[in-house]
Length: 297
Image (cartoon, rainbow, N blue to C red):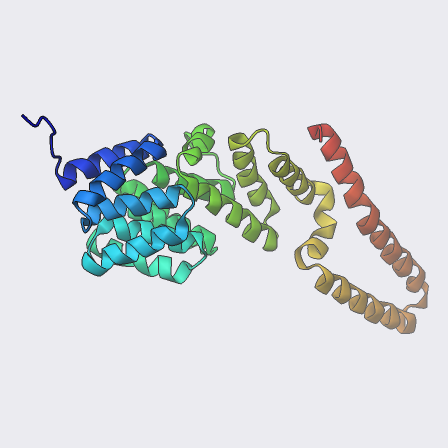
């Protein structure tokens, strides 16, 4: 008598996804090999294969499998969603946006999809649109963690304190895409001179990785840039050499004009310029050194 029970493709797919969810990847590969030997063309099993490859850093294999799945089952929601994630990870943001918009057209009541779209808009620095999408996501699914993260990121950027923000870093740990978005957002905010907003997000990253010397150093750097004593240097920090050249040109024009109209003002203007230059050269390094010592770096 044969006691071997033959499982259906759906049952094998459920077992596979359960193992993946528990991060038992080696055992999942064994189940996958057995399942695909019986059902080599099953779209759900192939999706599970792509997901396993994605989570074990075999991104090219995952992408190839997803394209295969969508070639035979173009409406496969999970495969399309994972492909959008792959596009986002590889900075193919227009492709990721197109995929998410297609999914939203089909599932306009999905708060989670709105939250994913909001996170993508944060990456592209469409902050107002991101916050509007985040609030719509939370309206549709008040308990969706990614929607909560998207809303709280908006609150951090605006400097607002929201309920539940103390567990933001814990929620972010369960959503790796939010961590990569946070890093990208910090870079963009710094480029725009929004140092305080960048620092608030960096602090959340530090809560997630308290032993990270790199993130701690980043927080200290942002603490220095957002310090009140650095306000006079904001144009130089914001625009770099462009601001320095502009300052020198403006100074030459002003001093030349003062030399013709009010010669007695040339001395104080020159002294002020020299003082500002010395301040810009020396003070930031002293401030950073003091902040690093305070942080124990």
